[in-house]
Amino acid sequence: MSVVEGIPAPYYVSCLHEEARSYYNNKNNAFELRVNGIDRSFFVHLEYLTSQSTFFRDHCTNVKEGDLVVIDVPSPETFEPIIEYLYFGNGDKWYDTMTIDNYNDVWHNVEYLGLDDNARSICFAFYQANQSSLEA
Image (cartoon, rainbow, N blue to C red; front, side):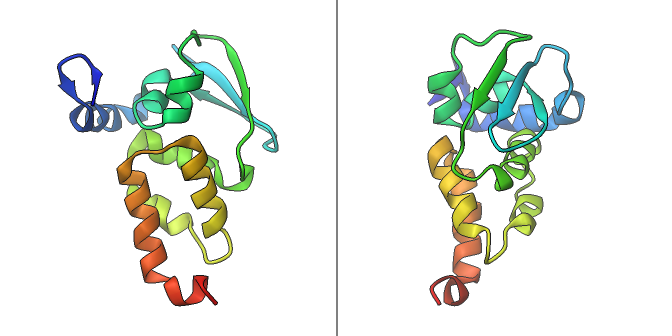
């Protein structure tokens, strides 16, 4: 699948991750995302969300700079590290936010948001490393 015509999705996403410092929570060229259950807004950019999430690809096609979008997710408590992961691509940092207690909530968000195979692989690695505790 190509996010931008002629550019392979993994390459496009890696380029976005390289530029994340300039865009993460930066209001320029962003729209405001509010998640019910979280008391703050996120200023996000379509490219970061739609390139890695089918939910955002399906629900934010007409969003423009400066718009306000309010969404529900299964677990608001585990949402912010996902946004940071989508921007920076730091799977180790995201993995470190997962615990035995919040793993199922993280996984429900990953499924609901339709995150890509890279995100699912990180969750699967956590599950494998903690399988005996998670199934207890």
